[in-house]
Image (cartoon, rainbow, N blue to C red; front, side):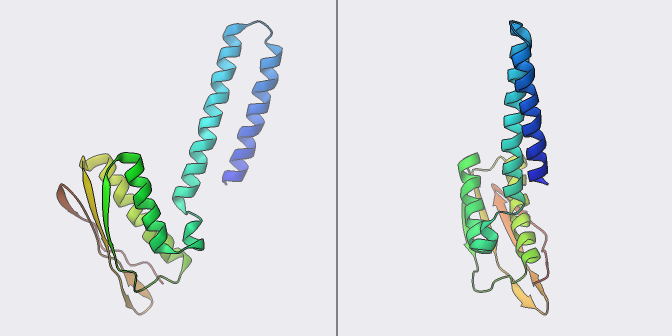
Length: 156
């Protein structure tokens, strides 16, 4: 998806450049075209960030726990909110979909904290138990007040 959109945005940018060459001395038109190029650049950067946010490559390369560590560090860098982590790394999630689901649950919880909690610190605790073919993850995220996230059970 992002490759196709990236190619389309690049084509738009090339068309804008072509129009810019034809505008001659029309300063207002040239300014509008440059603004359009900046908007395209910002859209491409946003698209890349979104693609990484949905499923970072490090989930495949390093695993769930390092990916969550990266997410927590990125959250702290973006919002200035410290994330205290307690992650039970004794068990791993063997399925790609399960790891993605766990990552997205933590990501959404942190996003909600940033948007709604006015927090100065987040306590993130991840523990799971294997029961058959599923994995439960009671997640607690606290930010000034205690917010209890629902348990999630993606398949392993």
